Amino acid sequence: MTERSFLLPLVPVAKRPQQAAPPNRLLDLLTALAADSRNCLALLSGRSTENLDRWFGSVRGLWLAAEHGAELKSPSADTWEPLRSQVQTDWKSTVMPILEHFVDRTPGSFLEEKKYAVVWHYRMVEPEFGEWLANELVSMLEAMLAETELRAFRGEKIVEVKPVWANKGEVLDRLLALYPDPDFIFAAGDDRTDEDLFERSLNGARTVHIGLGPTHASYVVPDFEELRTVLGSFASPEDTRKAS
View 1: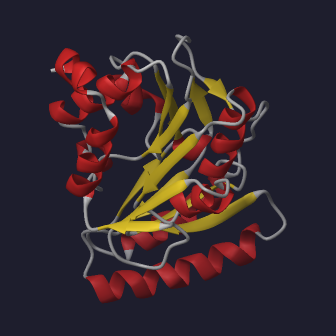
View 2: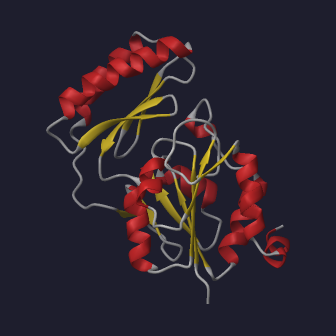
């Protein structure tokens, strides 16, 4: 039996993280792919466990990875499993005042506190000013976090402070340990955090970057609609009809 692995983000970035809910046609597509017993389908996201449960919990057979892989949920489980045990989060009290200072000086920006990370969002800030401040913030945080397991990561109009081990490449390693020697791996993403996944993918894997910008992916598509078209070609007509 051919075994195929898919590791995916499928919803464009929204102005507010909670607005990035999937459309019904995307849920139908995921349901069709997950229904094929040959597939190991995983959705890797920076969103919280609560968001992923609410948006994708109804898709049977789907692996979920929250906060870039800090927590995993298998298709057969009702609860989430931390990628690492005994994780410390007391560092937030040190980092938060700095991020709050940047919110105060940057109209339109805001903070998001996750379980394992803190994020400064500046999507609604004047672009040139936002990029300048993001560079300043990352430089400041890099000096502060140098001797810790934390790092400041640049994403799509965000600066996120999180542990280095919470990354999508680690999720790939975990899945490959459970499903060794797949015949086909397809991984896609649009963010800098997806580069960890692309760099760790095995030779021969089909890796796809969505949008413009430098990437380690093998292929590039212009937008999410194009990616969904490609994914639709992997779902059998019978499964697609069942999911509709």
